[in-house]
Length: 274
Image 1: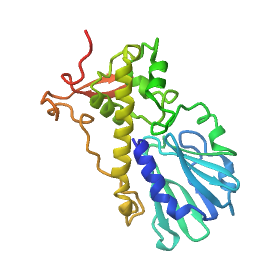
Image 2: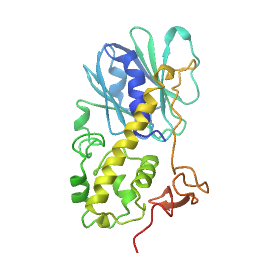
Image 3: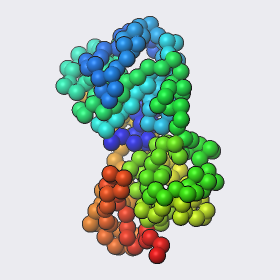
């Protein structure tokens, strides 16, 4: 599933091709992804794409006729093509945004869990209005994490994946951050100490920043000959490494279902307090 660094990389990858361009047509080959595709999207002809931004895992195209919100869901991806290439449309190519200069932003999504939505103002859309702070912003602090965690019995992994607490910390980066902070993923959020909150906020910022930088180094290869994005290979400490040796202590990485998600951790480096 694309997480925040992949969405940020997608934004940086497509922005040079779209910013300042006018929309000639939006072709929708399905009526519904995760939610129905609003008819407003098919009436965007002539709208200039003023800017592109990201909020949580939503990519936003700001236009003269309102904002287009794109979510990659579980399996979505964005690619750039040229009309002149006559690239065949694939089975899972559900949306094409075509500019007046012949650039195509193509959305592919085999599982159709993503979204294309429209709003007059994206940040006031019901899906974005109540979101917590961006993890790399100054608003995401250890003090906020400490305050929000009081009287919360939920596991800390679920707590930091709650978009009302902080946005964009998905399963992969939650596992990685808790490992780096030395915190067991099942620890009740209310049992976090102030020092642990300081450490956790610090490593969340470090992990995400490193992943975004790593993705940024591949931007020259973002658009492949088939129009699909070239996502970066991630160097992970625990996620997806069940049964492998911990890089820090040599113990075998374990996995457990927490909040309906596979959770990876080192039983030695991330001990639960007795």
